Image (spheres, rainbow, N blue to C red):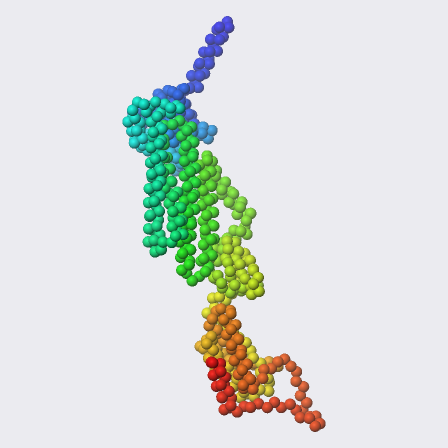
Length: 535
């Protein structure tokens, strides 16, 4: 009885084992699993693996099944069955049309896919049609030829690896080194020629940057060669996986380095351009653009590195979008200031060194930064104004004036005779014409009104120089000439005062100012004053 029970249990276990090894084509997961399972060394049944190939798509379905697995192994591609769809009616939402199709590795092998035919899933007709081209691309003929040409000792194993693979790896590394050396020099030569052709100069600084740019480009070409050749050595899937992970990481790092150096080249070229422009505001844009472009390169590089390390690209992009939104919401002021910075550089309301009035702040623009601008006031103190505010308020840019306007009023005593007023005004006009720093085409000197304590003479002139110091020197020279003219003519300036006039008082006479208004004398005084001014 015990023997019968043991035979029964053994028989049922064999049946269950046979059932577990049946070819299952109900969904993408089952089809891919069946294909790979029946090509493993301990369950090798290629005729069953061939059942996963699209019917009548090839005369040799067994060879096709083996080639697909060799391609996946050669590129180090592990199938993650946890994320492979088990839905028998699966449809890829990213594909156009209503197709039951699943691509195993869309980023690396977009042509290898399974599709539904009737109620079963097979490797697609597209895969079988392009299988030979994919295989030849993954396994170049010249590496396979090396295996064929190797004598018998080359197929002996050392540490479980055939000798010809050691020889092939050595040859591959030597060729990669030569490619790196050749293309590094060739790339540097081309970049120098392009730079010299467009900018007509060849400085030492740009040469160093171009050399640093050419070095990783040569390494990338060498890595691309290794990436192309290495699968042909047919190492195990595990070895291939880690080798290609390392290659992808290295390529990503070198690409980040290339783009960082490319940013330096672009910024160097742009800085050379800004040095030839009159505006100093462009010079301030160089470090801002450099930091901005560098940040973008690093950010995109980190996203790419995460996908290389195995993170899902869709998840990474979604996470970056959500993270970017959270950062944007948390730093609204910074974003506004950044937008304000670009608005300042686009509109150019002022330049570095301009004297501006921005609200309550008056001073000279020293720096336009990534977030704020520095204004130095007359007392040499520094105002740090956020660019968002600076781009919104009204700015009076005195640095863009064509001329510096000077307007003042002179007060003469009320008892000054009309003839003397006319002579004084005439003399002021001739002084302005004789002044080398004033515009003779546009000025005003007029008797404009009656003040509380003086007769008002308005002077309105424009100085040619825009520099504040030169303007003050010009004022000083004009003021001295006015004072000398007034003294020579006998004109007295008034000052706030109160006069008490007594018309009748015993034995006292009223105050009577005496003015010399002889016209010849007045003309002679004006002539002498102008000659003295011009000395």
